[in-house]
Amino acid sequence: MYRKNAWENYDEQEMQRLTAFAEDYKAFIDAGKTERECVEQAVAAAERAGYVSLETVIRENRRLKAGDRVYQNWMNKDFLLYVIGEKPLEEGMNILGAHIDSPRIDVKQNPLYEDESIAYLDTHYYGGIKKYQWVALPLALHGVIVRKDGTSERVSIGEDAADPVFYISDLLIHLAQDQMAKPAREVVEGEALNLIVGSVPLKGEEKEPVKKAVLKLLNEKYGVEEEDLLSAELEIVPAGKARDVGFDRSLIAGYGHDDRVCSYPSMRAVLDYEGTPAYTLCAVLTDKEEIGSVGATGMGSEYFVNGTAEIYNAVYGSYSELGLKRMLRSSRMLSSDVSAGFDPNFAGVFEKKNAALLGRGVCFNKFTGRGGKSGSNDANAEYVAQIRRIMDENNVDFQTAELGKVDVGGGGTIAYICAKYGMNVIDAGIAVLSMHAPWELVSKADLWEEYKCYCAFLKDARAF
Ligand code: MN
Ligand code: MN
Image 1 (tube, rainbow, N blue to C red):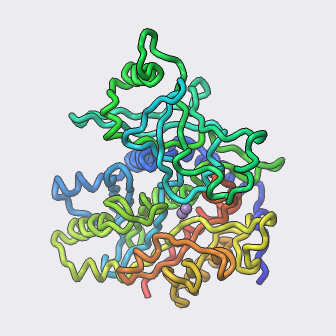
Image 2 (image 1 turned 180 degrees about the horizontal axis):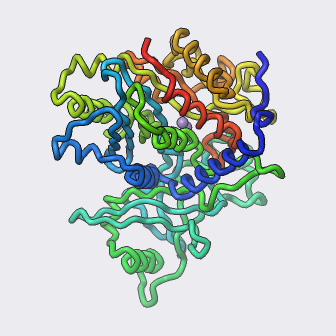
Image 3 (image 1 turned 180 degrees about the vertical axis):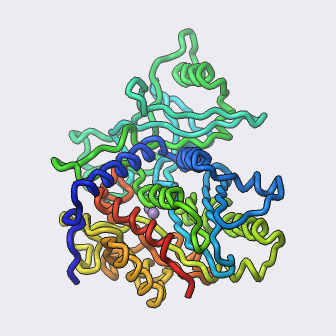
């Protein structure tokens, strides 16, 4: 099936809008290297756009009507937007969902130690990473340290040009004869991902003088003690900003495209929606996708249904479980997550005519899963047909794909979780090269078509 290159579509005016959107996106991921930092930006954007927090709606027992706009910040790690539509809630919502957690390296709870006059933070990586990719490059430290009294300190070191960075060492090639013969998963072992954080001893100290010097610096900068690290969430991520790639600047290398390259346009599409929609609109940016959507902030938690139940209650002034169930089962959702971009360097793992190509627009995966579609949401043909119509009527370039050759591998998204409520869900996203590497690669044209896709979906998706 022929799919034209999206870049061939654009006149000068659209190129300007595409470029401006890419700049906005780069600013978002530069400032949003953790789920918390993404939520913080999203809350600020929602408040700027006049959205009211769900907590305010609940506290003041407010009634909501068509055109009202509400956001929810759940535990500073999940974010939801709602725009109330004209139609009864039982006819369902048009929902955009994506995740804002990304693969990274987390600091352990008892992390700080010293070995041969080098101070380290011990780590446990988060999500699926090729561990050997995360050594010998500048790393930044982001997160939060919470004291027993509930006060907390935000940490972000390594992004400003004047900041120091952190570093995990690799073995020199000269002595790597044995290492180079190992399987890639063992080349750098998880327990060897130790972050170098200092090497100057505290004068006059005999025992662990470098560790003590680091603790002194932490205390001076943040007013925290070693014990406070027990209640810290510190995430180690690549240091530095997203960069344009190529002579033509058509691509972006950035950290956490998976899945902020879907999260940001999902959020923007709802925030940019003008006026009162026919159906209620929703965007959900979720945490914990990379470790199986578990936990109180994962899509598998009830937070999304709880928030939606509150919306239902605020619209009708009373709650009906049956009403909420009808609302959820008639909804339409784009579960947006990145697709494995076809990589000519590794062509062997792809089935080319069902692979996501860079520059061919937004990508729909009817199903994901592995080996025999196991664990997959498999979107209904009727729903796929509706999506095709919306894309064609709104001149959005799209392609369809699956995750590599049938027996090669696979993966999951949040689609199957939302599908539990009986709603129509399809995976949507864009092609990424080097997924889960410190610096991933996407096409600006795909980002733009993705944003156009979300805007069209919010406007034109409808109940069956
Ligand atoms: Mn993902
Ligand atoms: Mn992922």
